[in-house]
Amino acid sequence: MNTNRFLPRHKAAELLQHIRSSDTKTVYDPEKHRLTLLDEAGIEQVHFRLPLSLPHSDTGIAEDGKVHYILLLIQAGHCAMGYFEDGQCLNHKVFRSYMVRQKQGKSQIKYLKTKGKSRAGSRVRLGETAEFFENINNRLQDYFREHRIDRIALSCSKTLLPYLYASAIPTPFDKRDPRLFKIPKHIHTPIYEVLLDANRFLQRGELISLTEAGFAAIPALEDFLLHHLDAADGHDGTLPFTETADEVYVTDEWEDEGDDVFFDDVDDEDDIVDWD
Image 1 (spheres, one colour):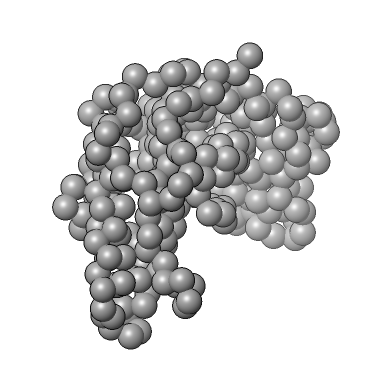
Image 2 (cartoon, rainbow, N blue to C red):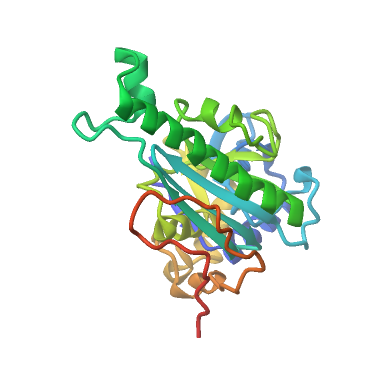
């Protein structure tokens, strides 16, 4: 079976047009933002995950327009989030809280499911857990108030999701929002650099072979890979250096709220790096 192949955004856009101009049968899954390519017998052969900033006609976003989206990465006690336009990070925020029991190495939430409440320490952790999700939703409210949001790319465990949606500060979307997109990638502890790495991943297209025949079973795809793509364009699964040009950071317009609470000594402010 063929291995997965990654395409830089401009080549993914070319492939999308190439497939549309052929007689290839496709099915679009808006929740996963991907096309499934079928052979002449109607058998699924390849998944084509589109770059998040590359709209599809079925999304309701103009295909020549910019996609506005949020990346939201949440793990126990750690959150990195940002607002992006057309692949560019315009604002970001990192939150941390004291949610993990030091000796057991598990979050207070998971501990409660097995052992029940402990004493003062657990009350502190539960209080900071509530404040952690309130801070997240406060920032999300800012993004939704100031911008049009086309997609919400989310990485969050099922254990933590109820706390996000049940926070005293409401989440500006519900769990059935059609804009939600589950990031198909393992995310390390969310920090600013991990947020950028997730964005780079989402700016690439991905071809996923489903059968032994795989790419060769789709004539239009095989033609594109043979004649329109070379190693410099990601044929070998790498990302060309020029693709990192999507990361252009400008100073955000939000003032740093004095009420934001951090639980580490690490300084994670909103200042965005201006690249030369």
